[in-house]
Length: 407
Image 1 (cartoon, rainbow, N blue to C red):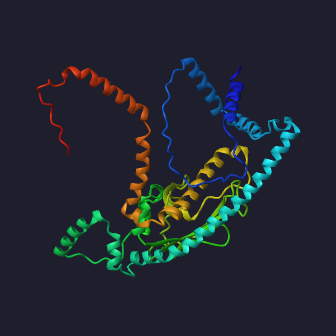
Image 2: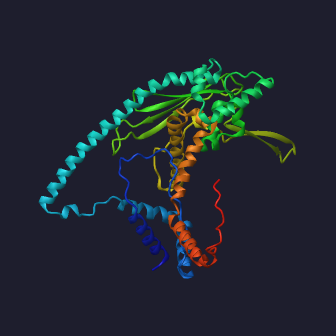
Image 3: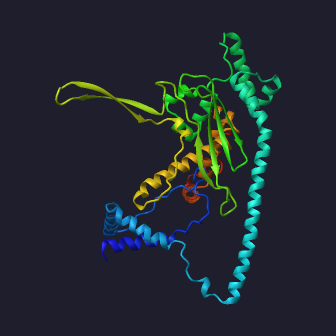
């Protein structure tokens, strides 16, 4: 068997093991932390097998046209009817049609379920809004919390620390500060995903971010509004980003993400954080004179969030790698919007103080506790064996055992 046919067989086996994705399943979903810890298998293959696999992979890697052709042919096999249903008897086929009728009724209920969930989210957003408005006033310094609100916000373990800090504050002069400086910048930087996309150059502009809020509208989707105080970077006071869903619901009755649109940022002259100006010297061959050429290139910045990626309209087999890259960008972009809507805006103070991270880590620690049960059991068995071996070293009957001190 030659290398091309071997590669064909291997890829077919791999594709047959993967379940086909339903046609109407949502394409993108908010990123979640995987609870599955990758395991390292024990390698027992001989060198000949490893070399063969390496040869097959190198053939495919060095021949993108062959890879595209194989993927195209195998893609036609995914979801193809097996002929099993057609070979069933008429009575069985009749019962299957009855099952389809039940499924249609179930799908209709799923649609109503999702619509009611959306209506409930809109209802409670109206109840949350006054709280968000008061939070914005505290952050900007337009209002001060009452003594009762301060008392409610202090947990039992914070009382002693607060009393010590108040004594220290009385002894020294404290500069008065308006509101809570850099509240939203700190909250966003605490979030793992947003912390990665906020650059040092962004921070000076992000210090002017005074509020982040969200809203629903009649069509399926939601809008995020970022309010900024006057600054040296752009003239906009509010930067918005809207996430749209398809009118038709998906396979399970859920809303399917379609695209996003962002506000065009009106940058002040020389303050555009989305580009970097590169300066190069060019020498004329004839006159030997030099000139300075300036060129603007895209720069990494948080504010690219308001220029979301766009899915290509035409799909071409030659652009598979580019399509995969676009899919990743679209998924990341949608996930950031969902994180703001569901986690950061409702619990902004917890992200500001770092409490939200403690809850995130708690889930990972909990999974770790149950990840290596087999190894723990083996360690326990080893300890039991060691205890059996140490029976001869136990204290004599008249000897007192070492005292066990509880801490």
